[in-house]
Length: 440
Ligand code: LLP
Image (cartoon, rainbow, N blue to C red):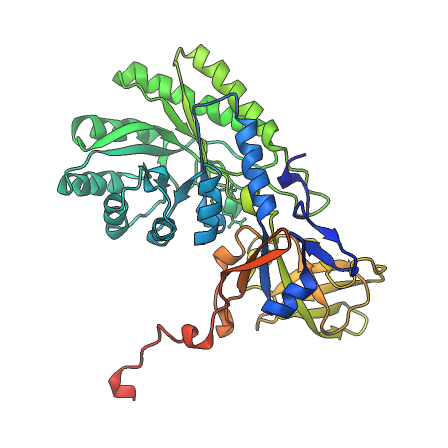
C-alpha cells in the first residue's frame, strides 16, 4: 500500500487524550492555537509518497519527477519536494515566482499552460525555467520571438492531446480529443514544420500529455506511452527528427472515501516502464526519458482541514444540517465536482455514530455543502471537525468569497507544528482595494 491508498495521513492516530493527532500534534490543540478553519499538512506523508515514487521508478533512471504545483504550492512545499529530488511543473507567473523565491533550481521547472502570457514567457526565460511545454501555434511564434530577443535557445516539449479517455469527472479529463489543451494529433505535423523551418530558437526535445486527474486505471498510462511513442516513431520516419523525451503528466488518484480504490504508485510505474520497454523495442527508439507530474497523489492525503462546529438546523421531516466555520471558499471541490469526503470529529473520534447529518459551509449559497449524509456522533457547538484528504486543490483553489479571510496552513512533524501560510488579515483583505479620488 502506498500513501495515496489510505484515507488518512500516515501518522494519524488517536492519542491518550482520546483526540485525533497527526504528525504527533493533537488536532484539538492545533485548532485552539491557530484557530479554524485550518489546513494541517503532515510532512511525513508528503515525504513518504515522494520516496514511494522514487522507489517505484528506481530501476528506470531516465526519469524526472516534477511535482504539479497547482495541487498546493507554498515556499515550504517547494523546500520539501526539492529536497526529495523533485522538480516542479509550474503553470503561471505566480507559481514560477513562488518556486524562484523558495530557492528552487529553476532549470528543474517545466512551464505548462494553454494560454501563457508574453509577460509570463519572458519571466520564465529570465528566471531560467528549464523547459517549456508549448501548447499551441500562437505560443510557438511568441516563444520563438522572445527567445530571439534574449539570444536564447529554449528547450520545448509539444503538448498533445493523445485521444485517451479516462473515467474521471468531465472537468478534470484532459487527454480526450475534444479538449482545450495542446495540439491535436492532426496538428502536430504543421507545428513540426514550423519548428524545423522557421523557429530556430526552439529546440524540440519531446512530447507532453496529461490524460486527466483522479485516475484509477493503471492501464491508461500504458496506452498513453503507446500513443506517444508511436507518434515519436512517426515523427522520426517522416521528419528525421529524433525525440527522446515523453512527459506523461500527472493524474494518479487518491482515496477520499472507502469506495475509492486508487492503484499504488508501483502499479503505475510498472505499467509505464513495461510500456516503454515494449514500445521502444517495437519502434527501435533507444533510450527514452520520462517526466511525470504528480500533484494530488503527493499532497492530497497529507492534508486535512479542521473546522469548528457552529449552528445546526433540523428540517422538519427532512435533513439535519450542521454548519461549520468554512466551506466552499476553502474547499470548492464538493460544489464544483460533487467531490465526496470523509470526516471525523477530532475531539471525540471514538464516540458512537448515532446520526446522519449534512455538513454545511458558512457561505451564502445553498450549494455550499461540504459533505452530504455523513454518519456522525452527537455534535455540539465547538466540536472540531476534521475533513480528510483536503491537501490537494483545496487551498490552491480557495477564494475570498463573501470576503471571508483565507485560512492558515500548518505543517506538522514529530510533535512540532509550524505555520506555512499565515491566516489572512482584514488589512491584507482590503490591501489591493483602491478608492478613486472622486469617491473620497
Ligand atoms: N500535469 C498537468 C499538465 C496537469 O494539467 C495536471 C492537473 C497535473 C499534471 C497534475 O494532476 P494530478 O496528479 O494532480 O491529478 N482541480 C481539480 C484537478 C485539476 C487538475 C488539473 N491538472 C480537482 O480538484 O480535482
